Length: 238
Figure 1 (spheres, rainbow, N blue to C red):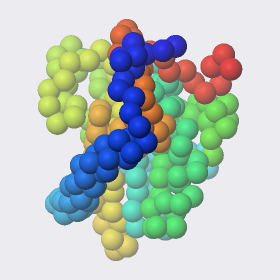
Figure 2: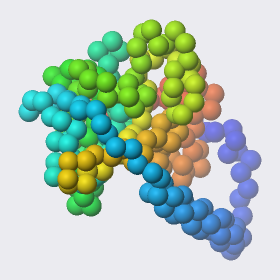
Figure 3: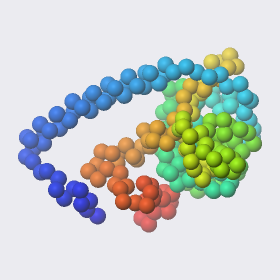
Figure 4: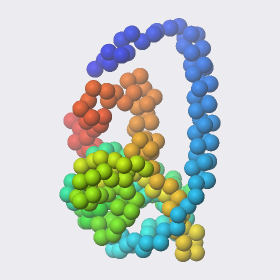
């Protein structure tokens, strides 16, 4: 369907378009430089040593946080919203659809990418098989990991505001999305180096980055909620 906002879009000659594009390129390059600076500052943030001994459940049995690194020094955890009460999240599945191919390349840069959810491992594996995913996915249902990293909340906590995205947040959801990063120094010490939530994980969504390039953008204005259009990838009509 045509977007009404596009009906009055200015149409110009190729030379005029090129001039406008070059002018916009100046802003894009400045944004790229600023993003590089921001990424460097992110890497320079202080770390927190992980003192708690977390044990996760996977298809191969119990794994410690150190085990999840798989002999690499850096670990990225995607906090996938999938609790036994509410089932798998469509939005998190949208993010996870790119994990298979991305993870292979990350492995060759000393990075392991995994997903962690509260649901039992057999439920995670069944859904993973349905979706055709192969990335490693672990259950934190028997530990405090999700709660400690502020992506899961008890029913009691939801009666008041919870801490999410570094502020007090009101929600009725037991789980929220996010990403956390850890470093293993090879001497038995693991450090939490970074976490991001909400719009902070937008950059990790490959499809959204493509949609931001096209004339209609994400085209989510006017929906009941921004991602109301989204389906599990095996549930679209075509």
